[in-house]
Length: 62
Image (cartoon, rainbow, N blue to C red; front, side, top):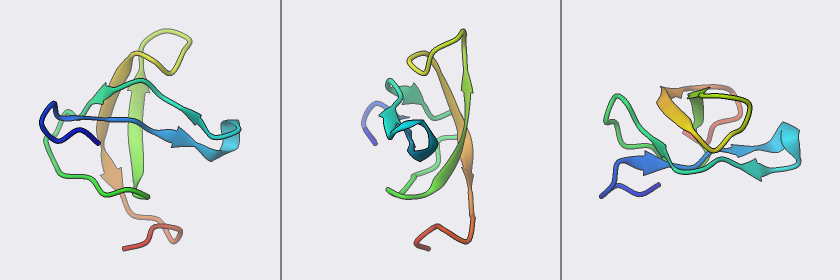
């Protein structure tokens, strides 16, 4: 996460740990490493899009 820029990168364990491009965080919340996030991608790839926010799952550390 780049707090100065308000961006983050998402890791996709189900896609061989592929990493997204820098995604702007729309709701401006501070995210922690390991939190589950909801992303919206533009086009077919994972390089351009937005992080819409986070949600808690049983697998999250917090």
